[in-house]
Amino acid sequence: MNWPMRPNQRPHERQAREASRVCRPLPCLMSGHQSGLTTVEMLLVAALMLVVAGLTVPRFGSRLVPYEEVQTSAQNVAAHLRLARRQAISGRRDHRLLLSPATAPYTSYRIEELDGSWVEVRGPFTLPDSVSCSGDREHRFNPQGRASATTSITLKRNATSRTVGVLAATGRIWVEP
Image (cartoon, rainbow, N blue to C red; front, top):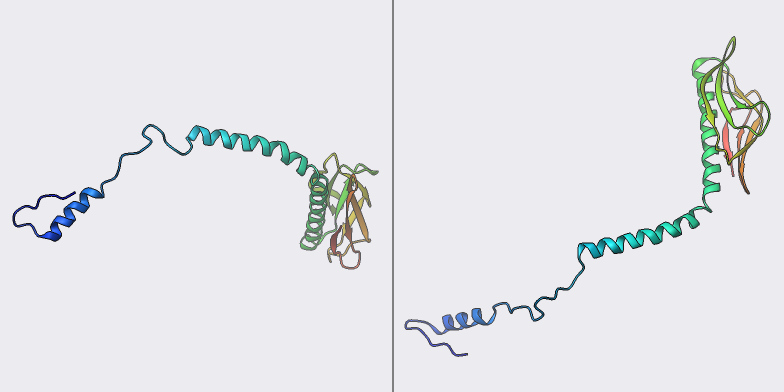
């Protein structure tokens, strides 16, 4: 398009004026139609993904539950054995971790202090119903931190088991796979 020049207008000003008219944005060719997703569509897709994930995760996770439950129980028992040992050293009195009931399978345990007679200082701590517990009932530590005997506790669920052991000479506590 050839625009008439105004008087006193230079040629390069004319080109700039023409360029500004040519570079204007064009109206949308598909007026009334928009591309992209609405918020409702996005929420529906997210909800569908959550439903699918909710159906698949329990099947995958159920294989890990026995291992995790036994491992966590073993770590908790080992931590409480270490606590009983630390309390024996710091309190300068014998402490013990005692499993209950009197015979296996054990369902709970507590930490006791020897003060003339055994006095409960922590617990009782309950083991999960699905985990069976067997082994030595009493795990005793003296004020030097040594155990009265080498003892062990075995925690088991299905084919998964962990053993928590105590070494008499040093009082060292460990968890075996």
